[in-house]
Length: 352
Image 1: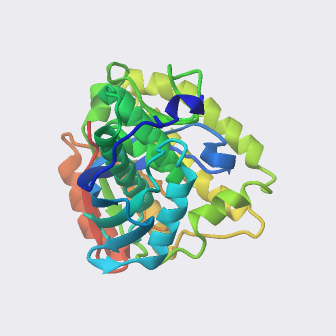
Image 2: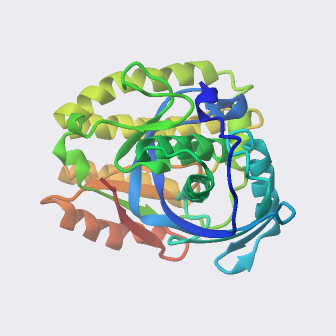
């Protein structure tokens, strides 16, 4: 199926500057473990965030020797440039013009670096969107916006797996599952809006910055350790199975079951890390303090505050915007912020 994304050999390149903004996303059913060429070991589903995004400009200098210069928030990043050069070489068959010029890429995030918000997802999503803008200018073919977006998702996946989910708003699925029509391992698809209860379309995501430093184990290494994890296959099957109840939960608006499933998925992700060889723990003391306080608060008040975790220590606090949200926000600010590294919190909402 990759053949559908092969590039047209007929193109006319020229000096251009394009730009794109791409949001980050947070997975509810987690992707952890992959095969060659960024093929996921199990399907995943994520919410797209509204405020946390990457803004990227890409200058293409035609017929210059191929090279990449990258700047993050105004600072040149040589290692990232090397990574992008490798990535561009890897996707040449899909964009045959890609190595025929020089690139100057300037990127900024609207959220703190290493904040537990996937900057690789929004970053590669923005780069893939810029590349598709150039392809539209250079190509002799005209494509429908839906086709362009699908190819952008495909290309983003080859840079960072979860990036493919950032090309769409709302709930987004990546990985083949019988529960979602059109789903694929090669690119992400939007979960059908008409199958989502209104309660899930007005959600907050406040990210508590428990630890803002570099992770002790990168996500790339963590994914690789799933290859020898004795519980990996069971985990992959569980993620596939979880799409069955999730589909009903999303349709009926069963918040209680949604909370149970999402928190279980988050803890399972970190359980896989602790059962790897070598084992590693990305949660910090503050992570556990927040989770325990949150559980007590929910039990005592009944307010629908719950959490998910990325591959790191920081906590995504999820709650609907409804009659209980003021009490929840007050609890977060008075009881949970003290467990962050510097009182840091990123306040976002889900983007539909």
